[in-house]
Image 1: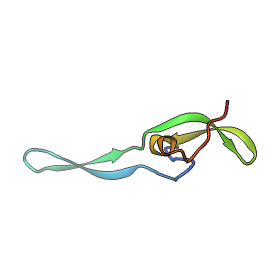
Image 2: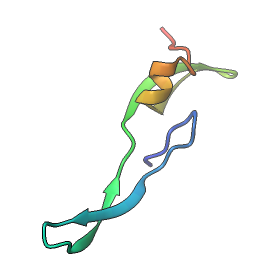
Image 3: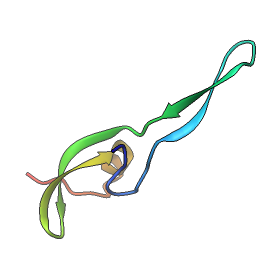
Length: 62
């Protein structure tokens, strides 16, 4: 579910590293916003990451 409609950014996996250098798995999720955008088939509500919104890769629908 956590995938950007424009760039395809998905969750990334890494480690929590404690002070004693113990490592446990953790997940980095993209900052997705559900917005209405203009597509070829008309306006559509999709999940888009904030980087794509900020860089102007999409056009918002009214």
